[in-house]
Length: 306
Image (cartoon, rainbow, N blue to C red; front, side):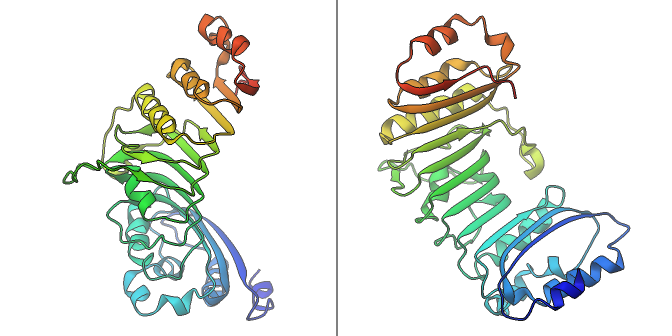
């Protein structure tokens, strides 16, 4: 592997994916050599995916994201970088602290994927078109969308309302005219969609993720019906041209009623609804009546057990 990298030239852009599964025993020497070779060619990275578990492990590929190094001139380190994905679920706080500091200094990105993101992070997200976040903490998603004026595709698994000082209410609302694809998990504090308008949204996906939100030192009791109600209100006031709704919901935890109301709101929409352990819902009169009588959906799929 090391020899292949060394023979790959010095100018051709590289798409790098590194999945690390190391513990306190350290990194094998053969792996260290490969990682060293990759780091020495960071100026060729076009995309970087750095995922895995690295408890007790240190390597200069992780130190690339130290703030001091970034301030010394990371643009020379990553001149070609367009896409960055960093997922370290067990070392999230360590990596997140480095990432939050360095994002301001690296070249403008088109695609970013991170485990956690805070509204207070001083990250320059102006050029992003795709953003995927495991846990976002802030006052509402409006704070995130304001930082991403070119965003077309957003995925957020969990939203945690910040307990830091409450900002003044946004009476005018916020409209994001470009966002067209939205993917959501099932853990959202109330207030995530406050004053948000998404007039160009064409596709919505809601998927249960089961994330441990207390990984960032908050404990929350999430109410799926409340969060879906708030989302439904946002979609209604946005008057968006939704073309497809994908609902992958846990039937043991969530009544179908609100999910169906979301779909009813839009005409000419493709609905793909899948429920875990769906056999428990086959006798649901409300669900069967809606699926057989609703004419607003071009296609309907239900009871597909995940």
